[in-house]
Length: 598
Ligand code: GTP
Image 1 (spheres, rainbow, N blue to C red):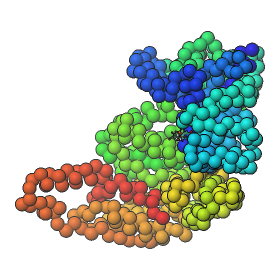
Image 2 (image 1 turned 90 degrees about the horizontal axis):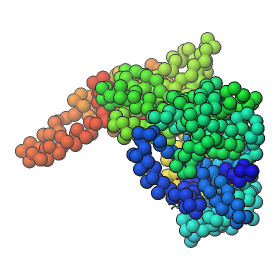
Image 3 (image 1 turned 90 degrees about the vertical axis):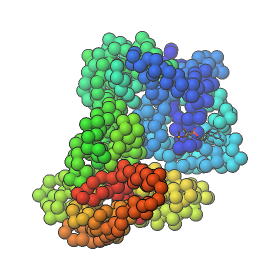
C-alpha cells in the first residue's frame, strides 16, 4: 500500500537549462528546505556533527507531497551528475527511478546533452515528462521548442508543462504530473533483497555510506548483505532516508531510496551499478547494466617540491576514499622525479582532482599532458596497454597500434556547419552523418580519436561558434592508426615528460609548432638551449632559446630599491611553477604545450 504512493524521479537537462533552479523550487514547494538553506544547514551540521560522523551529499532527497487527489505521496528526487565524464553514474541514477523530468530551455531548445540524457532515460525505460523552462524570457519560443521535442525525440508534448523555475511558474503542475504519470515502484516485497547502488561516499567515522534504491525485498539493521559484483559481505549497522537530512529509519522497503551503513572501509567495495542482496538468501540474478568503470585519460602528477611527495600520496589516497574511479600508481620521470601516474574518467574529472590537490591539500603540482590508453601489438604477438608515452615501445618491436575513438554529436546552427566540419577534420575526425533538427540547426556526427578530444577540442568548438555549439560523446571502440612517439630534447637531453604520441602524417608539423612554443615558454638561461623534436633518431624540428645577455637587475642599478625588490619579487613569482630539468628551468606551461597547438 505504501509502495503505491512512492514516486522516484530525476531531472535531466542540458547544462544551464535550469535543473538546479527547478530542483530548488520543488524542494521549496514541498516544504523541504531550499537548497541554499540546506547548504547552510549542511555546513552547520558538518561542523556540529563531525564528531558523530554525519556528512551529507545531496544526491537524493525525500519529499512529502499532498496531491490534488487528497493523498500524501513520497517523492524521491535523485540527482544526476551533469557532465559527460560521468555518463555511467548518470545512467545508474536513472536506473533507480521510474520517471524523469526533461527540462528544455524555451529559448535554446534541444542541445547535445538533452539528447544524450534522453537516450539514457529511454535505455532505463523511464517515463519522460517534458518541461519547457524559462518561459519568462523574452526570447522564449515554447511552441517551437515543443515541436522540436516532438520531432526530434518523439515525445508527446501536449501535456508538457510550460514553466519558469526562476519565477516559480508551473511547479505545482510538474508535481501533479509526477504523481499521475510516473509509475509507482513495481518490486516484490516477499522476494529476497535486491537493491541498486547508485552512489556512495566515505565518512571518516562510519566508513562508506552506500546510496541504494530497493527493487525487491527489504533491508534493515542486522541484515547480512552481499555486493554481487565485488562478492563482499557486510553486516548492516543502520539504514536511513534523506529527509533531507540523513535520518535513520527502521527499514527500507520496495521502492525506497536511502542509505546503508555497514562498516565498509573501501569505496571500491561498493561500486556504482552493483546489486546489494541478502547474503544468506541471495537473489538469483543481479540487476542488469553493471559495468566496472575504467579510467579513460591518464596524466602524471608531480610535486614541484620533492619534499611534497609523501603528502601528495596521502592526498591521492584521501581523494580515492570518495572516488573509486580515481586510480594512481607511483611513477618516476628522469625529468620530473618522483610522482604518480593517475587515471581519470575524463578531462573534467582530471581538472577537479588537480584543483583539489592544490587547493585543499596545498601541494603545487606539475602535471604532464593527458594521454589516452593505446593498444600496442608487438611483432611477437604481445599486446601492451600504454597510458604513458614514455613507455611506448621502440618502433622495431611494434606490429600495429590502436587508439580509442569516440562518436561525437555536435549540435550547431546551420551557419557553422562548415566551421565545425573543418575543425573535426583537423582533429582527424571522420564524418558519419548530418541531420537537421529543425530549419536552423543540425546535428553533426563524427568519429574522432579520443586523444584529439582531450586536447582543446571543446574550447575550439565553443570559440569557433561563438558558444552556440553543444557537444556530447561516447566511446565507440579502438581503431588501428599510424601513430609514432615524438620526443623532445632540451639541451640535447631527452625530456621524458614531454614525449607524446602523434599521427605520423602530423608529426612534422606538430614537432615544428611545439618547438616554437617551447622557445617562447622557456625563459632565457645563462647559456643557449637548443630545443629539438625527434621521431626515433630523426630530428624533425629545431629551435634555440638564446642565452641571457645581461643581468636583469642591471637596469635597476642606481634606481630606487623598492623597484628592485619588486622585480625580484616578480622573478620569484615566475619561478613558482618552474622545474629544473637537467640544467634547464622549464615552466609548467611547457608540459602542457603539446595540448594547444593547432
Ligand atoms: P548546471 O548546474 O550547470 O547543470 O545548470 P542547471 O541546468 O542546473 O541550471 P541552473 O538551474 O543553474 O540555471 C542556469 C541559469 O539559468 C541560472 O542563471 C538560472 O538563474 C537561470 N534560470 C533557471 N531557470 C530559469 C527560468 O525559468 N527563467 C530564467 N529567465 N532563467 C532561469
